[in-house]
Amino acid sequence: AGDNSAREAWAELEQLVRGRPAAEVLERWQRLLIELGASHPHPAASGLLAWLHMFGLPSADASAPIIPRDVDAAVRIARQGAELASPRCGLCYTLLGLLLSIGYPPLVGAAHLTVDS
Image (cartoon, rainbow, N blue to C red; front, side, top):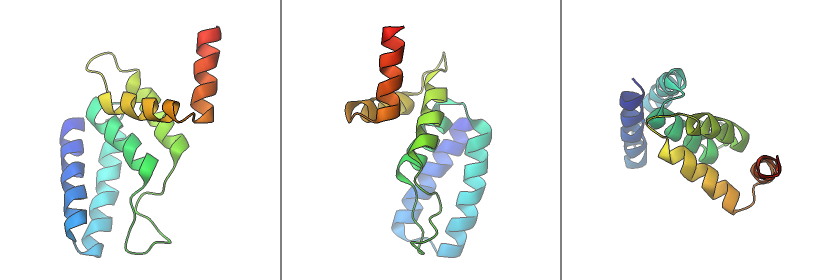
């Protein structure tokens, strides 16, 4: 289920860029977010969900994005996805690595706490 939801979400992102009508976009993304959330933790679904929360998804109305930016939610989702044993969530590790490399304080603090323990 997670693989299918992630594939469909990537296809929807492409359609969004190509100019799908606004009414269809909101309805489809609401459904996809429910499916991705229900599949989490899953390598494909968690990675995509984390990145969507990291960068958000704008709508035609800038004051009401389809997915608002929420770095803390992105980190929480990516951490849960990174804990998967097999298969691993590469997008989750990539997002966490990006945030660690720029010194995102909650992650840096957690990394120091883990190393010092």
